[in-house]
Image (cartoon, rainbow, N blue to C red):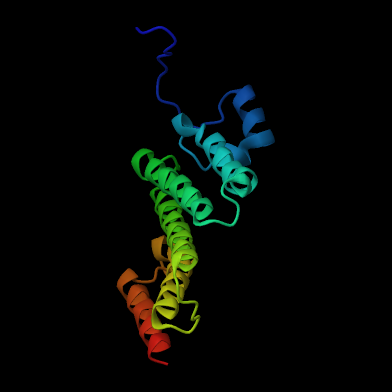
Length: 173
């Protein structure tokens, strides 16, 4: 074995031990959404939030570089989520990735707005990007229903088709 590496068996949140039951009862809301071996993801998420809210305001204040730094941070976290699948269910992993894509689209749009020379808010590309971000954020809200089984299950094709229809109707008007 290499120095500093612990070999531990795979774990599950089974709450059999008194210590584990107490930990789940006291701070379980912080880590129960994650697979047991990915419990550290909550720490990574807190660092990401700290970078995006507290530290990013000091980097290139008001400049496109500030938005670009936020875009890089969000992109790296999205890649981490996609690669490691830290959440306990497939649905939570899908929702986290899709929400991150929405954040990336929003930041990219902000970067485009800061870099553009014409400031016409009614231009077609502004409207299209606004509607695209709206649809992505709307679908993030619908993902839990799209993933449900049983009577509440909505076919994904119908929802995506309705979203595309809504987008085309709003663009046409």
